[in-house]
Picture 1 (cartoon, helix red, strand yellow):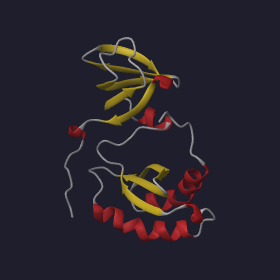
Picture 2 (tube, one colour; picture 1 turned 45 degrees about the vertical axis):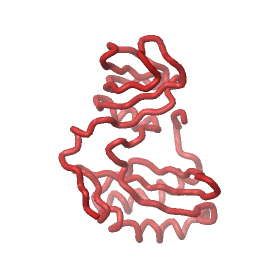
Picture 3 (cartoon, one colour; picture 1 turned 90 degrees about the horizontal axis):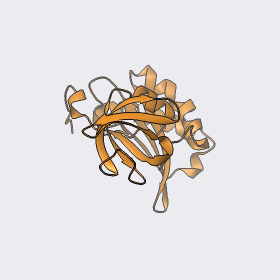
Picture 4 (cartoon, one colour; picture 1 turned 180 degrees about the vertical axis):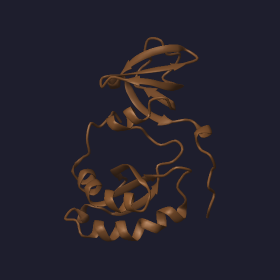
Length: 168
C-alpha cells in the first residue's frame, strides 16, 4: 500500500468538489479513495464526525455529493460512488492523517520484520511523526520505523468511540 503524499488526480478533483458539501453538513472529510476492485472503479468518500457517523448521516449528503460528482469531467472513470463512515478501524494512508493520529492506538503492519518488533503485525500507540518515520510504543517498547517499512496503519481503539451507532 505505502503512504501517499497526495491524492491522485481523481481523488484531488473529488476532494475539491465535495469538501464544502461535507463540511457544510457538519462532517469532516477523512479521505477520498479512488480504487479499482475487479473490473470496477470505486470512488469512496469517507466522512467523520464526533460520536461517529450513521447510515442516515451518509444518506443525508449522498445525493448532494452524487449530483456534484456528476458535474465533474472525470465521471466516466467511476463505476460506483460510495459515501461512508471512515470507520473505527479507519486507514491512515496520507501524511496529514499520520500527523492527526499521533496519540492514537493503531494496528501497524510492516513489509518485513523490523528490528525491535516481535512480528510484522503489531498493536501500538503512535507517539510521533517527523515526516520520514513514525515513533510507536507497545508491549515491545518504543521504536522508530521508516514509513518505507510500513505497509499499513489503521486505528485500533474502540474505546475512543463514545458509542457505536447501529442504526439500520
